[in-house]
Amino acid sequence: MDQDVGVLARGVTRSFGRFQALRGMDLTVPYGEVTALVGANGAGKTTLMLVLATLLAPDPGTAEVKVAGYDLRTHSALARASLGWMPDTFGVYDRLTAVEYLEFFAAAYRVPRADAATRIAELLERVHLVEFARQPVHVLSRGQKQRLGLARALVHRPKVLLLDEPASGLDPRSRVELRDLLRGLAAEGCAVLVSSHILNELEEIADRVVLVDQGRTAGEHDLATLLASASGIWRIRALDEDALGVALDRRSVPHRIASGTPGVDAGPLTEQEAASLLTDLVGDGVRIVSYAPVGGVLESVYLAMTEDRR
Image 1 (tube, rainbow, N blue to C red):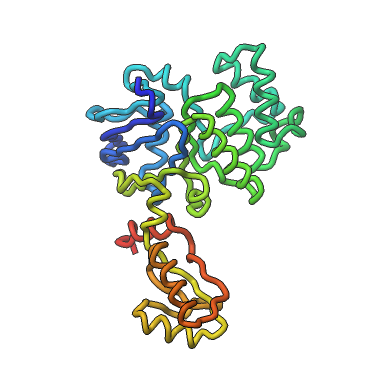
Image 2: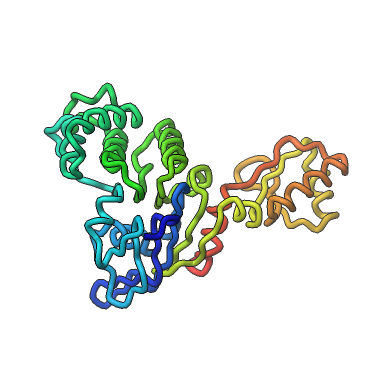
């Protein structure tokens, strides 16, 4: 088995009749890191997740697809026992309590009964559902059900965690708690793959990003490197915006008045270029009030990738 990589996929294809959803997808998800899967609706993210979760078989001709070191075509049961899967929507047994729900899945994963009670109590604490432990699932809000679904995916201590839109239905505090939980799981050595449309939050969660488009991998990047090298628009506010405009013109920096909010949008600029420009503006005597990127780097990269769809 490959000891360093939780998920290794090369040349994954999957067709539904004449429609080819995956056209040779590549993906690497290392242990100890959170990998973000980013792409438009219909890009193949969920189909790939279903393949990795062993719920869809890849087409013949797929070069390689392994989870926790196990080849899905020959050892799918071993792979399934090593992964936790949380789909974007999932069924719950409404008449069970939260504890009974987790007990059911602990038994399905053959977690020893002596260990299950301790594990379930730990998970309910971790996802902040202790007060609902003896409540029927149907009284939970959508966000609380999402958190219960995450606990379900973790009940057997998986080595690999697959999450499709895990923040769906979560309030802002729950999203922060989810971020901290995923970072904690990665620190414990879990390989985490998360698909989400909330790109700004992925920047705070992920170590790596895999961009997918039309069933193919458009790029795999270390997120810190991507954040440092990618270009984006920076919004600048100054006490004297006329002086700001003159200074930007003098340095041939593209800019325009920001839409619907005070300030000037300048760029595109990398982080290094933006830092140098700020130093220059202050040196020119421009009194800067605020200086920050517009949106996130992932959003900018994603929009550039899909520019041809406009």
